[in-house]
Image 1 (cartoon, rainbow, N blue to C red):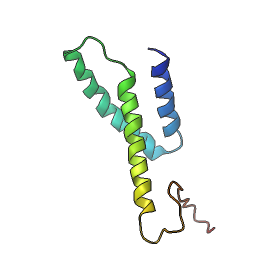
Image 2: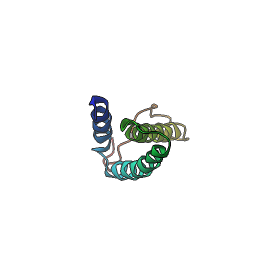
Image 3: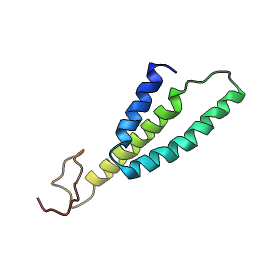
Image 4: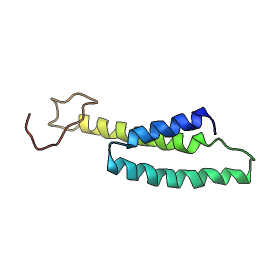
Length: 93
């Protein structure tokens, strides 16, 4: 296991640390991707350990960006810029 493996795993952990729902999604996605990636051992002798975690990170980021784009395009949200996340803490601004 090299530096790249640790870096990607740390980046995924940092992304997931703040949101419990995102943690569960990331864990489920990694649990699906990792065994699927292990099927490559039927054809090759070595596979990089970084790839399943990097794919998990990429998929979670892509889903987050799609959700932000969808929120930005909803009618009635003209005051919010793309990339701004709405805080729903119950306190009016």
